[in-house]
Image (cartoon, rainbow, N blue to C red; front, side):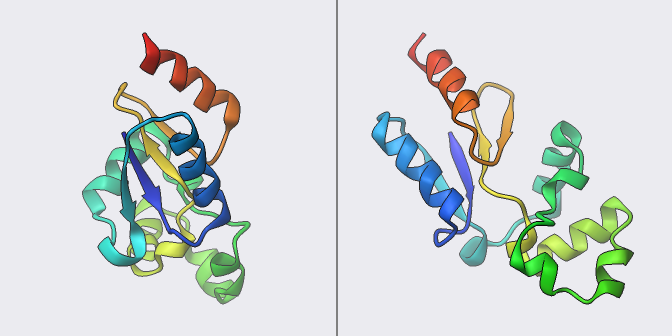
Length: 119
């Protein structure tokens, strides 16, 4: 299990706390310290689509100039932005180890994951 995010993000904190509460081992990948590769973005994009990887509700996106926001119309433009400004990536991203990737904190999805883990 691998969780990607930024440690000071409230949603990431909530997710990490949930994993700890349920005794699930995980590895944490800090975007700020470790960055993100284009190949990893490509992998997630194939599963989720590139558009959902951008957090358009977050401060980082909202502070971008409108021209830059409007220029993010392709996967390559999005990847370039995400590699430069990690905080624009929606988080957390959870690689479950069950050939699936979860995006954001969703307690129902996490509960389903817990059931799979306990099998």
